[in-house]
Image 1 (cartoon, rainbow, N blue to C red):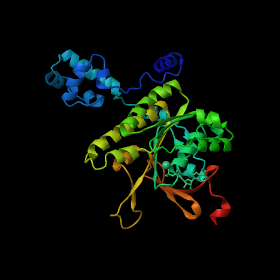
Image 2 (spheres, rainbow, N blue to C red):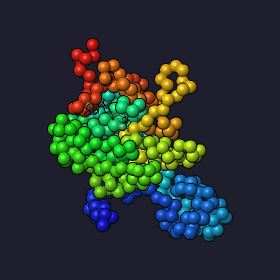
Image 3 (cartoon, protein in one colour):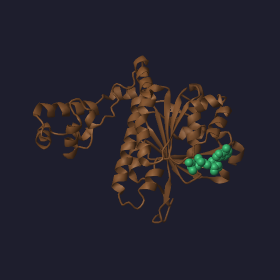
Image 4 (tube, rainbow, N blue to C red):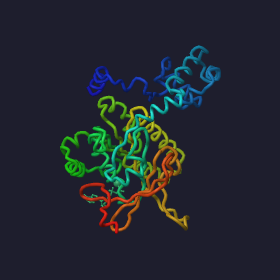
Length: 340
Ligand SMILES: Nc1ncnc2c1ncn2[C@@H]1O[C@H](COP(=O)(O)OP(=O)(O)O)[C@@H](O)[C@H]1O
Ligand SMILES: [Mg+2]
């Protein structure tokens, strides 16, 4: 039933969004059934990218298939993994379509070069209560605003791994911005993830959701690591965990690129007893998130209940800090009076 609806939508939607969006598994390639797929996997080619870079003659040997079949499979894998270059000009064109969503605070927007960007992953990490989720609530409302008010007239997807999504907060923030509260809530699709595997599945489902609703412009994952962290404690399989997190992050980045949506993920911090000077905390998940996220914000509590956001490792913006407040009205700049 649900699938039918989605197909219809695809057929009628002029903005074809799915045709070259590839999320395929090896067995989905033309000419590869499950038998060949498992041979390929047993030979060590775990995904399409690995297959795309394989030598067809090696495949003939290790998978016991004919050469024409092997060549066809590798060619399909290359096509599916879109190992293409684009010119600098094409790249510039793509960058031109980048849009920004207001965070509610002008100071924070400026720090981020105008707001949270589409085609990028923005990671916000900080202690419990630092305001990571509050920024997400604000973005999920602000994305719905018209362009001149810092929005994209868009909708949002929210993957909640900690059970901290609060409809009432969305309604409150929406009312402050002059939106219809119920409609604002209606425009957000919430997926509650109960395990890391479930989180992976929910992320895999996103292309379908965007096909069904091309107005989606924001994906929130709050938080990215909580379930992975909880489940892999003491299992001694950190490499497995990192591998899985890596796949999710790359899938999110592909979604951001392909559909021109903004991805905002939150992350916890852990204490670093070995750090004697400076801030003794670090984002969970090690370096992997840092390598994938385009923007990393480190959030901490500041003076008089304010919050301080620090931009870390941005490709094009200077490192810097911005202060803002979390009030019942949402994320706002600090009033001049209070700055003194
Ligand atoms: N309705 C509200 N009015 C004012 N401040 C709020 C409101 N809701 C949340 N906050 C502030 O946000 C903080 C929680 O931030 P949150 O984003 O949930 O933290 P986390 O970084 O753990 O996700 C609270 O401690 C409070 O200071
Ligand atoms: Mg939170």
